[in-house]
Length: 240
Image 1 (cartoon, rainbow, N blue to C red):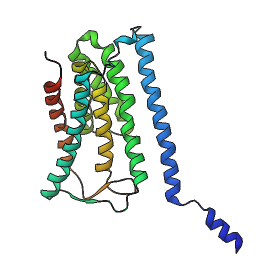
Image 2 (tube, rainbow, N blue to C red; image 1 turned 180 degrees about the vertical axis):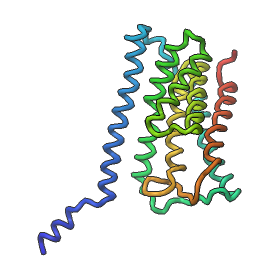
Image 3 (cartoon, rainbow, N blue to C red; image 1 turned 60 degrees about the vertical axis):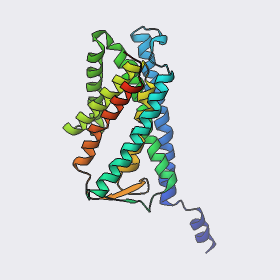
Image 4 (spheres, helix red, strand yellow; image 1 turned 90 degrees about the horizontal axis):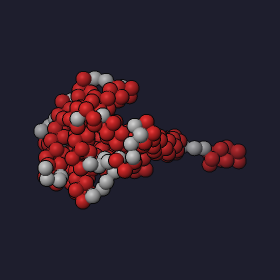
């Protein structure tokens, strides 16, 4: 009987196991994204042989304003999206009673951190190394590659690829306009984190739950979200 009590007292619950796995995944994601960011810097300096001072890493007043207003715009757009689809009867949303705060936070952070390495690699390195073809061509080509690379994660449908291209192109334009990857990086971070919280569906790592399919509304949101970002860039960016 004593042995049974000892076993029960030291048994690891499935929830604790999943949380441990998430902590491990978060640590790996941080290291992986740091590695990708460093890779972009190394290629910029030792393959393209460009001075590190030419990396678009400035974070002046314009870049800070864009980062702030862009993240607020993304958060507001998600709130409007949830509200409109609820009122229109397209999707039935509810707070997920089974959510575990630590799990929600970890999954959101793991998802959001993917944008860190991507911005350094695609907008910090690739966009700059293609710039001799012209800024618009560099933005288009780097965004096509950005979308294509995501096919390895299973996002190879035409709508997935179109959304990824539009997002990559928008972040490229922000980098060119502000001469900085930071506005796009911070907005990318916010967008990735919120998609996890809103579109996961259910489970311990989901903040919101919904019934049925998001259908066309998800794709409409992905496409239209770039519009306010581009308008904001024109508003708060440097005068041309």
